[in-house]
Length: 236
Length: 211
Image 1 (cartoon, rainbow over the protein chains, first blue to last red):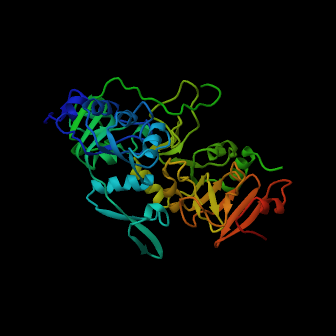
Image 2 (cartoon, rainbow over the protein chains, first blue to last red):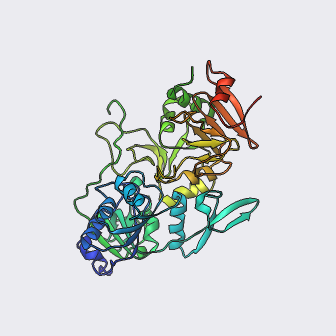
Image 3 (cartoon, each protein chain N blue to C red):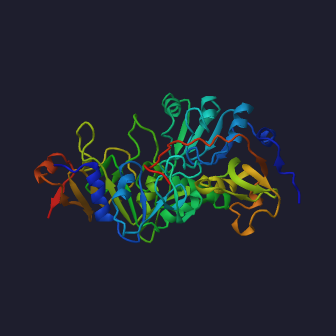
């Protein structure tokens, strides 16, 4: 089996594909399941005017917040950006564009993009600003708004383990947007905590098939920051 | 005496949480509702970032960065838990498979319109999953303070803030009472201890029907 999709570092994996003005899917929910190494590599590459599709935009000094601080992001397509002061400041002073999508609409737009579906109808957002300028159509007595599929130039995603074929599994809620984004880009680059030999993963439990993963790397030095450490009293 | 926020959670648990339901709780006050569910009632909590069967917060030292809820708090799993991606999670929500959602709000109108995601010029946090939840889940219950910090009513004739959904709210629980939206009218269903209907009317701009 060809192993050419494996790269040594995140810098190597993005080097000849990342360019200014690109549309990029970035996996993760909050700081959970984000491609830390690939974000750092994009920061170092210095590319600009990026439009980034990601549920959130990190926090001020971590995750996508790093690209925001560097002024590399022109526009965000997100559902919730409330954890980031710098984001608010840049949005209010006009240096950052923002397209807010309902979270389910965002996920489904990406799923549709990856499945070759140009548009779909949903109840979500009918009668709100989200539906403004979009087709609203009645089915079985209820109104639905038309939303478009979303396909990106590059997807950067984070898995837990992958085999050398590119089959990926995720860990717990770090799965989130990663599998859908993997399907919806010209080039999907995946970083994982561990790359194993082909045959070491259970074929019945692969979350993303290798066909969707164009480039693969084993990440390093995961920080895995927790946004809101919340515990209960007592102990095990 | 108006209800405390703990009492509001208790009332929400008693009135809404029935055995066997699949429930999605919003960020903030609704997160405390599980503390008031009797042990003999089994409910299953969904977290829209991609988990069904959410367990309690972890003990100190057991936090897992890969296991969080939709409010980005660390949580735990249960034996029946399952994980899935965001599209599958919202297929669960948008396909009408979840029975109940309990959320916070900025404004609710007489006809059940909901505003809870933006204050133009002041707050641009975003709607997250709220629009999906209220547009597609079978029952939508709001848990909120009766008035905003400056005293202005949050139960209003018509919402002034950007809407989350139109005609989506079934019930509102505030510290003053419980209000049901039925056929585009708002009915008083329960009054807090020692609170009068006059007091409620004074603090409310929505038209309240008393049966």
